[in-house]
Image (cartoon, rainbow, N blue to C red; front, side):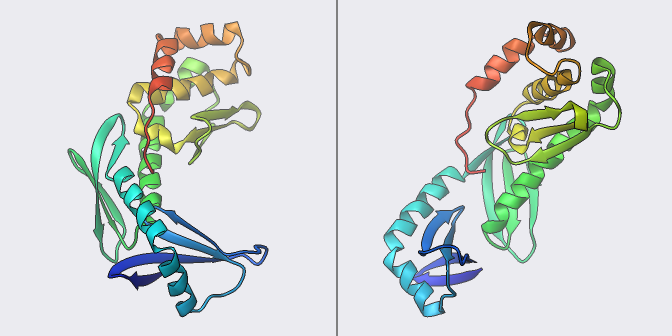
Length: 222
């Protein structure tokens, strides 16, 4: 990553080389300008691109700042504060999450790791209950991925459950409703009537909690 100074603004720039591209593409994400190019660019050419697209970049930088100043974690809203240093670390306080980062590019990785650790802790704390309730084998593998299309996915034959890291944004009851939903698929692969009856017996008010979950929307960058 390099830093370009234009109009007294320090702009972090990440160059991505893709020979298959026919054109040069520029986008802004999480406070960083990404330039995807089929050829290597000189520093002067990069500066020229930034200067030419300066207003576009500043507009999207401001939109990012509006989105990134708060974050949900385990059902609670936190202020999001960035500190810049050589090390990368994250600290959860009473009303604030503090990220010490080298650049904004590192923020996403740290937050995803925070989400992952929180979900691992939930799975570990409820492991015995899950195995007992759903009569599951003990060697189930939980995988945590950043996906937006679903909260969880189950592969009974492979003994794997995938959980979206964004689940860590929500209260415990919603996290458990998704975990139990996937665990019930080890008994019933499909969403037939018996599946929901089986699930509701093991997690009372499951349907109500799922309806609540579907109504919650967090418009956040991370």
